[in-house]
Amino acid sequence: MCALPPSASDAPRAEIVTASELVRHFGLWQERAARAPVYVMFRGRPRLVLTSIELMETLLAPHLPDRDVQGPDPAALLDLIRDMVVVADGDLRVVAASRTARAYFDASVAAGVPVETLVPLDARDILLKVLRHVVAAGVAQTIDLSSPRRTGGLLTLTIEPHRRGIALLVQDITAPNRPPNAAG
Image (tube, rainbow, N blue to C red; front, side):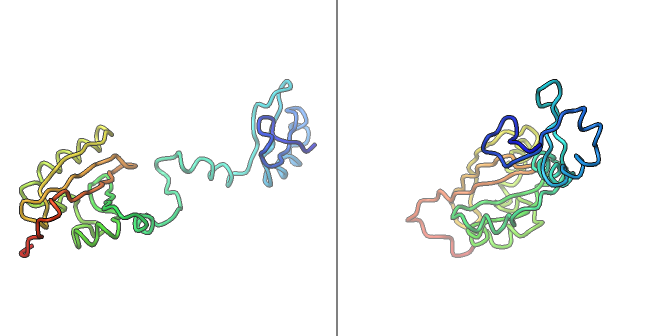
């Protein structure tokens, strides 16, 4: 018997079977479940869904933290935005950076480089403390630290928890009429 899923009239067509019919003809329903979900009715109500492993893994993949979900390249996605964004793993090493961040920070945002290299030496301990807090607590933080490119310059770093690491949104808040430091 082919019918619409019990709760979604706009969903693709699926099979519906009673629990007793499923038991009597399991081979038949197993084959059908390989092609489309089979809703199993128990006492007139949908109770279970029989489906393929592939479909189940696809449905669960975004919700399983230990699974690598195949998706678009994070660096390619970051390049579509104009903001300076840096993504780091749980060890606080750069995983990806937007094109704007790569232009601003150069080698400091290469894959595998520790995130604290984004700021000058005198600000690294403060940045590390905040980064570790964001990873541990899972709560975003915003801080202002000195810029590695401009003497007296400031960066605003918004640090968000991201998967098991962090994502940084960086803004250079140095006055626009102040010229960059020629030395560095």
